[in-house]
Length: 325
Image (cartoon, rainbow, N blue to C red; front, side, top):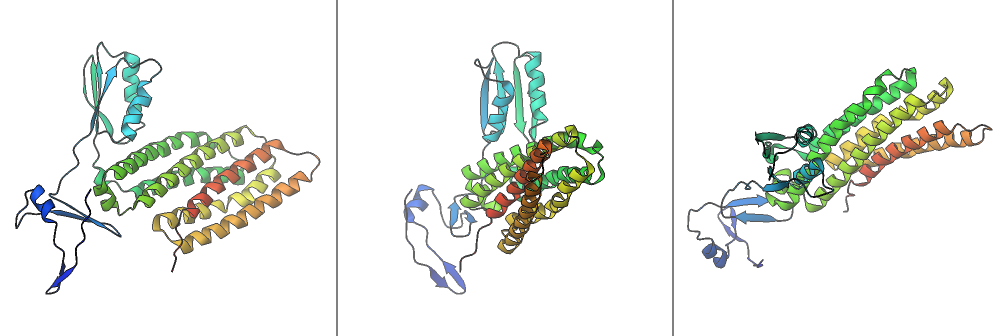
């Protein structure tokens, strides 16, 4: 890459900059030719023409090498941003592996089988990445996690654990959205065109990867929490102790996610204050339990899981960048 320095010129009401002759000649450009300009916060890029990223294709030989699974192989290709995944066999693809391929389609957003015969399966990513918004995917993940957590809070309040049975199933949708966001983030790193469309700098892309992973872990923890709560035999008094601090965590999650997506430091600080207040409540409950003669280990385990979820929202709030004057 060659760096050129140019002085800005003003002609009429316009500010102009001349392009390097070497670049013009190398790309056979002439007067009236169109170029594509992408802008970011501190830089811009110029391309010779408006172009769409060519489809990326990968061929997976079948049968796979020993120790490799068909689902992890397809998932890996999906996360790496391949648009077309071809499974090409020297022999017939087994029924078990075919069902596994179809099962992976349900876990990976936008992936569909477009061609299939005895020895080949072709899978394609059918979504236009430029129409997918990372912020909306993160909001979707958060909304699902919040619904799952609210079912836990309602169970603490009412003592009815019926709705907790379905919590694990909803976590599968968080995982689907997580894989989609990881794919999009990796594609954005490789394609500055996408970064410009989403208005994301490199540091923003990294932060979205961290936030998505944190949300995915929070969803898994809510599932673990619901399963433990189903198995537990806590008294009404113990359930109320959990409810007294759990009921405030919904507001903390909403403010943490909103502050990150909008990069609102004031909202993040507000969320952090609420997190500290919640931690204080939890600490007081733990201290009171430790002073009792008979310690309820199931209750302590549940408190730890709530703390783990609260830490997830704290980690996301910490990603919001301070404003330095």
